[in-house]
Image 1: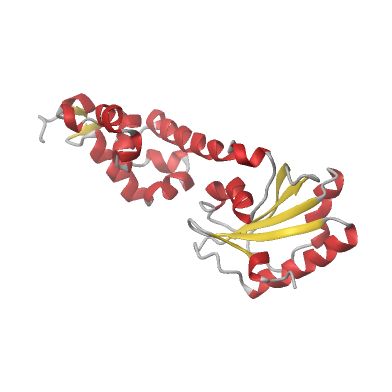
Image 2 (image 1 turned 120 degrees about the horizontal axis):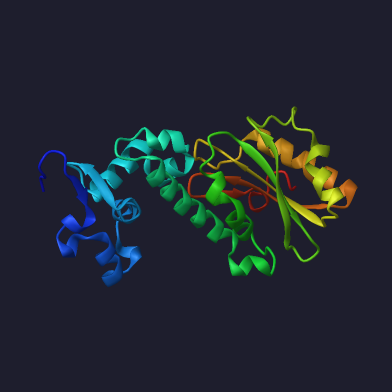
Length: 234
């Protein structure tokens, strides 16, 4: 579909059965492509480019949805046709998705599995460009007290102060903790260093009477429970 010079594509310029909003209403949001969902947020495209095509361009230039999640507002605004207002709308939608995962009703009753713990953090952590080590603080019913970021950067067991990992747990009277860190490469396979660190933290937890329930490694779309693998929990 071609427009005269200077005319911006609008969603209503598409055939009715091709309009994302109408398609969402008739068949459901789950059946729309990522580009179509972005088009609904964008509302209009640019000269010679429809909103759906602009959505596809954004996905391509930023590296799909994870790239959008990682990108700063300034980086998004460098894409032709994506100004501050549109970029802010997209970032707001991404943030709403993140917060939705934190409101999962099954987590209110307490964390009962590695998957429950991963659900608290992996939406955000799998998009991080650097390694981060976080500690999930739990009460006696395994309910979340808080999630604290302790370290940022490459995790070297010789550099991590084990006592620092328990500081908040002691101050907040946590009964147990779960360690979580991410691998920006996307591969959640634990390294030998991860095992050494886990072993040290588990031993320290026994001395402090604060149980270390698990150490999760977050990758791209997946995670590994080091306890289930028997790494550091021997």
